[in-house]
Length: 322
Image (cartoon, rainbow, N blue to C red):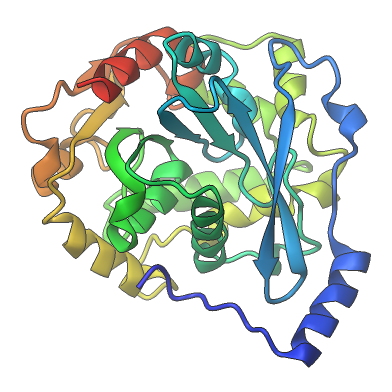
Protein backbone atom coordinates (compact mmCIF):
# COMPACT_ATOMS: atom_id res chain seq x y z
CA UNK A 1 0.00 0.00 0.00
CA UNK A 2 1.46 3.39 -1.01
CA UNK A 3 -1.26 5.61 0.48
CA UNK A 4 -4.98 5.60 1.24
CA UNK A 5 -5.93 8.29 -1.25
CA UNK A 6 -7.02 6.85 -4.56
CA UNK A 7 -7.41 8.59 -7.89
CA UNK A 8 -10.80 8.33 -9.62
CA UNK A 9 -10.74 7.90 -13.37
CA UNK A 10 -14.34 7.87 -14.66
CA UNK A 11 -15.09 9.97 -17.74
CA UNK A 12 -17.66 12.14 -15.96
CA UNK A 13 -15.34 12.75 -13.04
CA UNK A 14 -12.44 13.71 -15.28
CA UNK A 15 -14.69 16.06 -17.23
CA UNK A 16 -15.75 17.76 -14.01
CA UNK A 17 -12.15 17.89 -12.84
CA UNK A 18 -11.06 19.50 -16.10
CA UNK A 19 -13.71 22.19 -15.80
CA UNK A 20 -12.59 22.95 -12.24
CA UNK A 21 -8.92 23.06 -13.18
CA UNK A 22 -9.54 25.61 -15.92
CA UNK A 23 -11.44 28.00 -13.69
CA UNK A 24 -10.16 27.48 -10.17
CA UNK A 25 -6.48 26.62 -9.93
CA UNK A 26 -4.35 29.55 -8.75
CA UNK A 27 -0.93 29.92 -10.35
CA UNK A 28 1.59 32.56 -9.30
CA UNK A 29 2.97 34.52 -12.29
CA UNK A 30 6.59 33.81 -13.16
CA UNK A 31 7.35 37.52 -12.79
CA UNK A 32 6.96 37.18 -9.01
CA UNK A 33 10.07 35.01 -8.91
CA UNK A 34 12.40 37.22 -10.89
CA UNK A 35 15.56 38.46 -9.18
CA UNK A 36 14.95 36.78 -5.83
CA UNK A 37 18.11 37.06 -3.72
CA UNK A 38 20.37 34.00 -3.98
CA UNK A 39 17.73 31.97 -5.86
CA UNK A 40 18.51 31.72 -9.57
CA UNK A 41 17.59 28.07 -10.14
CA UNK A 42 15.69 27.17 -13.29
CA UNK A 43 12.10 26.04 -12.62
CA UNK A 44 10.98 22.50 -13.43
CA UNK A 45 7.40 21.23 -13.36
CA UNK A 46 5.61 17.91 -13.03
CA UNK A 47 1.92 17.46 -13.85
CA UNK A 48 0.27 15.25 -11.23
CA UNK A 49 -3.14 13.58 -11.63
CA UNK A 50 -5.80 14.85 -9.25
CA UNK A 51 -9.40 13.62 -8.83
CA UNK A 52 -10.86 17.09 -8.28
CA UNK A 53 -8.81 19.26 -10.64
CA UNK A 54 -7.71 16.80 -13.30
CA UNK A 55 -4.06 17.77 -13.10
CA UNK A 56 -1.95 19.89 -10.76
CA UNK A 57 1.45 21.35 -11.56
CA UNK A 58 4.15 20.76 -8.95
CA UNK A 59 7.32 22.83 -9.14
CA UNK A 60 10.70 21.45 -8.21
CA UNK A 61 14.32 22.56 -8.27
CA UNK A 62 16.57 20.12 -10.14
CA UNK A 63 20.25 21.05 -9.86
CA UNK A 64 23.52 19.20 -10.27
CA UNK A 65 24.63 16.48 -12.68
CA UNK A 66 21.79 14.53 -14.28
CA UNK A 67 23.53 11.25 -13.51
CA UNK A 68 24.47 12.25 -9.95
CA UNK A 69 23.13 10.45 -6.92
CA UNK A 70 19.94 12.18 -5.79
CA UNK A 71 19.49 14.06 -2.55
CA UNK A 72 15.89 15.13 -1.94
CA UNK A 73 15.21 18.28 0.10
CA UNK A 74 11.69 18.82 1.49
CA UNK A 75 10.56 22.08 3.11
CA UNK A 76 8.04 22.93 5.83
CA UNK A 77 5.46 25.48 6.90
CA UNK A 78 6.03 29.16 6.11
CA UNK A 79 8.53 28.40 3.39
CA UNK A 80 9.14 26.73 0.05
CA UNK A 81 12.20 25.53 -1.88
CA UNK A 82 13.67 29.02 -1.48
CA UNK A 83 14.75 28.01 2.03
CA UNK A 84 17.29 25.61 0.50
CA UNK A 85 19.01 28.29 -1.62
CA UNK A 86 22.22 28.04 0.45
CA UNK A 87 22.29 24.25 0.81
CA UNK A 88 21.70 23.44 -2.85
CA UNK A 89 25.00 24.76 -4.30
CA UNK A 90 26.96 23.15 -1.47
CA UNK A 91 25.43 19.74 -2.19
CA UNK A 92 25.69 19.96 -5.97
CA UNK A 93 29.34 21.05 -5.69
CA UNK A 94 30.01 17.63 -4.18
CA UNK A 95 28.62 15.94 -7.31
CA UNK A 96 25.10 15.20 -6.14
CA UNK A 97 21.86 15.96 -7.94
CA UNK A 98 19.43 17.92 -5.76
CA UNK A 99 15.65 17.68 -6.11
CA UNK A 100 13.65 20.16 -4.02
CA UNK A 101 9.88 20.24 -4.66
CA UNK A 102 7.38 22.86 -3.57
CA UNK A 103 4.33 21.26 -1.98
CA UNK A 104 1.03 21.86 -3.77
CA UNK A 105 -0.18 25.22 -2.45
CA UNK A 106 3.35 26.52 -1.87
CA UNK A 107 6.09 28.27 -3.82
CA UNK A 108 5.82 27.94 -7.59
CA UNK A 109 3.45 24.97 -7.40
CA UNK A 110 -0.27 25.27 -8.13
CA UNK A 111 -2.50 26.64 -5.40
CA UNK A 112 -6.08 25.49 -4.82
CA UNK A 113 -9.10 27.79 -4.47
CA UNK A 114 -10.10 26.95 -0.89
CA UNK A 115 -8.39 25.60 2.20
CA UNK A 116 -10.82 22.67 2.21
CA UNK A 117 -9.26 21.44 -1.04
CA UNK A 118 -6.21 20.26 0.92
CA UNK A 119 -5.95 17.27 3.24
CA UNK A 120 -3.01 15.46 4.80
CA UNK A 121 -3.85 12.42 2.66
CA UNK A 122 -3.90 14.46 -0.53
CA UNK A 123 -0.45 15.85 0.18
CA UNK A 124 0.83 12.32 0.77
CA UNK A 125 -0.77 11.29 -2.51
CA UNK A 126 0.63 14.19 -4.52
CA UNK A 127 4.15 13.62 -3.22
CA UNK A 128 3.96 9.87 -3.74
CA UNK A 129 2.86 10.48 -7.34
CA UNK A 130 5.77 12.90 -7.77
CA UNK A 131 8.28 10.38 -6.40
CA UNK A 132 6.94 7.70 -8.74
CA UNK A 133 7.09 10.01 -11.75
CA UNK A 134 10.68 10.92 -10.86
CA UNK A 135 11.44 7.19 -10.56
CA UNK A 136 13.09 7.60 -7.17
CA UNK A 137 14.93 4.49 -6.02
CA UNK A 138 17.20 4.32 -2.97
CA UNK A 139 17.75 8.08 -2.74
CA UNK A 140 18.94 10.13 0.23
CA UNK A 141 16.30 12.45 1.70
CA UNK A 142 16.62 15.48 3.95
CA UNK A 143 13.24 16.19 5.55
CA UNK A 144 12.52 19.39 7.48
CA UNK A 145 9.31 20.05 9.45
CA UNK A 146 6.34 19.07 7.23
CA UNK A 147 8.80 17.42 4.89
CA UNK A 148 9.22 14.84 7.64
CA UNK A 149 5.50 14.65 8.42
CA UNK A 150 4.87 13.55 4.84
CA UNK A 151 8.22 11.93 4.08
CA UNK A 152 8.26 9.54 7.03
CA UNK A 153 4.75 8.42 6.17
CA UNK A 154 5.74 7.76 2.55
CA UNK A 155 8.94 6.00 3.62
CA UNK A 156 6.94 3.52 5.69
CA UNK A 157 4.52 2.85 2.83
CA UNK A 158 7.01 2.86 -0.06
CA UNK A 159 10.45 2.14 1.42
CA UNK A 160 12.07 1.51 -1.96
CA UNK A 161 12.17 5.27 -2.59
CA UNK A 162 14.80 5.83 0.12
CA UNK A 163 18.21 4.46 1.09
CA UNK A 164 18.73 6.84 4.00
CA UNK A 165 16.85 9.70 5.65
CA UNK A 166 18.07 12.79 7.52
CA UNK A 167 15.57 14.68 9.67
CA UNK A 168 15.41 18.18 11.17
CA UNK A 169 12.82 19.48 13.63
CA UNK A 170 10.13 17.01 12.61
CA UNK A 171 8.22 13.92 13.72
CA UNK A 172 5.57 11.58 12.36
CA UNK A 173 2.36 13.04 13.85
CA UNK A 174 0.15 10.34 15.38
CA UNK A 175 -1.97 12.55 17.65
CA UNK A 176 -0.14 11.88 20.90
CA UNK A 177 2.25 14.83 21.15
CA UNK A 178 2.25 16.54 24.57
CA UNK A 179 2.81 19.91 22.86
CA UNK A 180 -0.78 20.01 21.59
CA UNK A 181 -1.91 22.97 23.74
CA UNK A 182 1.09 25.06 22.69
CA UNK A 183 0.33 24.37 19.04
CA UNK A 184 -3.34 25.28 19.42
CA UNK A 185 -2.38 28.58 21.06
CA UNK A 186 0.17 29.32 18.31
CA UNK A 187 -2.42 28.53 15.66
CA UNK A 188 -4.94 30.88 17.25
CA UNK A 189 -2.36 33.68 17.38
CA UNK A 190 -1.47 33.21 13.71
CA UNK A 191 -5.06 33.19 12.49
CA UNK A 192 -5.87 36.27 14.57
CA UNK A 193 -3.51 38.31 12.41
CA UNK A 194 -5.05 40.25 9.49
CA UNK A 195 -2.62 38.50 7.16
CA UNK A 196 -1.17 35.00 7.49
CA UNK A 197 2.57 35.73 7.53
CA UNK A 198 5.08 33.62 5.63
CA UNK A 199 8.33 35.55 5.47
CA UNK A 200 7.73 36.99 8.94
CA UNK A 201 6.96 33.49 10.22
CA UNK A 202 10.37 32.33 9.07
CA UNK A 203 12.01 35.45 10.48
CA UNK A 204 10.34 34.97 13.87
CA UNK A 205 11.37 31.31 13.97
CA UNK A 206 15.00 31.82 12.92
CA UNK A 207 17.87 32.59 15.29
CA UNK A 208 19.52 34.84 12.71
CA UNK A 209 17.14 37.59 11.66
CA UNK A 210 16.46 37.93 7.95
CA UNK A 211 16.89 40.93 5.70
CA UNK A 212 13.74 42.63 4.36
CA UNK A 213 14.64 41.31 0.90
CA UNK A 214 14.80 37.73 2.15
CA UNK A 215 11.50 38.07 4.01
CA UNK A 216 9.94 39.39 0.81
CA UNK A 217 11.33 36.43 -1.14
CA UNK A 218 9.56 33.97 1.15
CA UNK A 219 6.37 35.95 0.47
CA UNK A 220 6.94 36.13 -3.31
CA UNK A 221 4.59 33.24 -4.25
CA UNK A 222 1.63 34.86 -2.49
CA UNK A 223 0.35 37.97 -4.25
CA UNK A 224 -2.49 38.30 -1.76
CA UNK A 225 -4.24 36.22 0.89
CA UNK A 226 -6.14 34.20 -1.74
CA UNK A 227 -2.83 32.61 -2.73
CA UNK A 228 -2.23 31.29 0.81
CA UNK A 229 -4.82 28.52 0.94
CA UNK A 230 -2.05 25.92 1.23
CA UNK A 231 -0.14 27.52 4.12
CA UNK A 232 -3.39 28.40 5.89
CA UNK A 233 -4.55 24.80 5.73
CA UNK A 234 -1.44 23.19 7.21
CA UNK A 235 -2.18 24.09 10.85
CA UNK A 236 -5.68 22.64 10.53
CA UNK A 237 -4.68 19.25 9.10
CA UNK A 238 -1.76 18.47 11.41
CA UNK A 239 -2.89 15.37 13.35
CA UNK A 240 -2.50 16.69 16.90
CA UNK A 241 -5.19 14.52 18.54
CA UNK A 242 -6.08 10.87 18.13
CA UNK A 243 -9.52 11.57 16.64
CA UNK A 244 -8.17 13.50 13.64
CA UNK A 245 -7.99 12.36 10.03
CA UNK A 246 -4.78 10.54 9.00
CA UNK A 247 -3.98 9.37 12.55
CA UNK A 248 -4.75 5.69 11.75
CA UNK A 249 -2.59 5.80 8.62
CA UNK A 250 0.23 7.62 10.39
CA UNK A 251 0.06 5.28 13.36
CA UNK A 252 0.38 2.28 11.04
CA UNK A 253 3.38 3.96 9.43
CA UNK A 254 4.91 4.59 12.87
CA UNK A 255 4.61 0.89 13.68
CA UNK A 256 6.29 0.04 10.38
CA UNK A 257 9.16 2.40 11.19
CA UNK A 258 9.81 0.34 14.32
CA UNK A 259 11.40 -2.15 11.92
CA UNK A 260 13.12 0.40 9.66
CA UNK A 261 16.82 -0.53 9.48
CA UNK A 262 18.01 1.86 6.79
CA UNK A 263 20.16 4.73 8.17
CA UNK A 264 18.29 7.61 9.82
CA UNK A 265 20.11 10.73 11.02
CA UNK A 266 18.68 13.52 13.18
CA UNK A 267 20.01 17.08 12.87
CA UNK A 268 17.89 19.12 15.28
CA UNK A 269 18.04 22.53 16.90
CA UNK A 270 19.64 22.13 20.32
CA UNK A 271 16.79 23.89 22.10
CA UNK A 272 14.45 21.06 21.03
CA UNK A 273 16.34 18.54 23.14
CA UNK A 274 14.00 16.77 25.54
CA UNK A 275 10.85 18.47 24.20
CA UNK A 276 7.86 17.07 22.30
CA UNK A 277 9.64 18.05 19.08
CA UNK A 278 13.01 16.67 20.13
CA UNK A 279 14.84 13.87 18.31
CA UNK A 280 14.79 11.36 21.16
CA UNK A 281 11.51 9.71 20.17
CA UNK A 282 12.77 9.08 16.65
CA UNK A 283 16.18 7.83 17.77
CA UNK A 284 14.67 5.44 20.31
CA UNK A 285 11.98 4.10 17.97
CA UNK A 286 13.69 3.63 14.59
CA UNK A 287 16.41 0.94 14.50
CA UNK A 288 18.19 2.65 11.61
CA UNK A 289 18.92 5.62 13.89
CA UNK A 290 21.15 3.53 16.12
CA UNK A 291 24.83 4.41 15.95
CA UNK A 292 24.38 7.45 13.69
CA UNK A 293 26.19 10.77 14.19
CA UNK A 294 23.14 12.63 15.49
CA UNK A 295 23.68 16.31 16.15
CA UNK A 296 22.03 19.10 18.13
CA UNK A 297 22.93 22.45 16.60
CA UNK A 298 23.37 25.48 18.84
CA UNK A 299 22.24 28.97 17.84
CA UNK A 300 19.52 27.52 15.61
CA UNK A 301 15.85 28.40 15.82
CA UNK A 302 13.00 26.33 14.46
CA UNK A 303 14.04 27.28 10.92
CA UNK A 304 17.33 25.47 11.26
CA UNK A 305 17.79 25.42 7.47
CA UNK A 306 17.91 29.20 7.48
CA UNK A 307 20.29 29.38 10.44
CA UNK A 308 22.69 26.49 9.73
CA UNK A 309 22.77 25.68 6.00
CA UNK A 310 26.52 25.06 5.89
CA UNK A 311 26.54 22.70 8.86
CA UNK A 312 23.49 20.84 7.59
CA UNK A 313 24.96 20.46 4.11
CA UNK A 314 28.24 19.09 5.45
CA UNK A 315 26.50 16.62 7.76
CA UNK A 316 24.17 15.57 4.95
CA UNK A 317 27.04 15.00 2.53
CA UNK A 318 28.93 12.92 5.07
CA UNK A 319 25.77 10.92 5.76
CA UNK A 320 25.00 10.41 2.06
CA UNK A 321 28.51 9.15 1.43
CA UNK A 322 28.64 6.77 4.38
